[in-house]
Length: 232
Image (tube, rainbow, N blue to C red; front, side):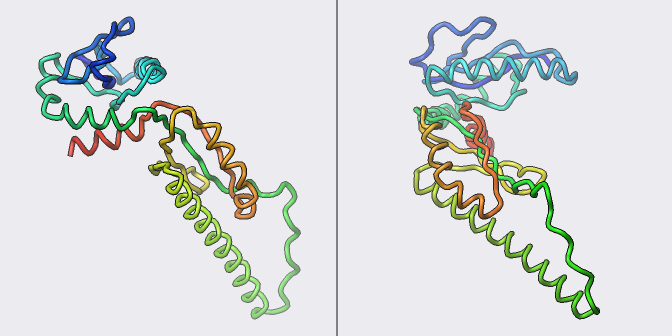
């Protein structure tokens, strides 16, 4: 891969000197953060180095103010090609950047609790086929009731987040089930969100769910959603 790697956008008002090894390209009221693209991202070592450099750059700008990151591997052949492709979208890109002012991203993972270390002893053997069928149905009903309770708990949590003004976007769920959401919160409110979730721990415990909150991060997932809309 050769050319110009695009990392993201900041406002023109923040167009001071770019960090070392990176530069900026003017785009209406935006500045595009760019660097020389690696020759090849096919090897794991080069791809990892590029990903770390991309994250470091975006995080550096995010600490200073709003930044609209783009997907790793977005490459243009030249500054002229970048400007020609993105100039028609500059207004919408700037609006998307402005919407991220004072925001940061958290990742909330909800997964089924680990089973107890000492499982309950197995039931005694059924006396006959009818007893076996009743026992099997009872076990199935318990499992369905537990899943319904978990689904209701997740739906209630998502509605409560909306009520708090916290947008969420779904991500691939953990392998063991549950859900994973990207949350867009006010900058500096991660501790408040953590306390709010902890205050509801009894409800999640009763539903057999564990919650893990990671971040804060630059708004990668929400920016990706915006960029996909623009591409469409």
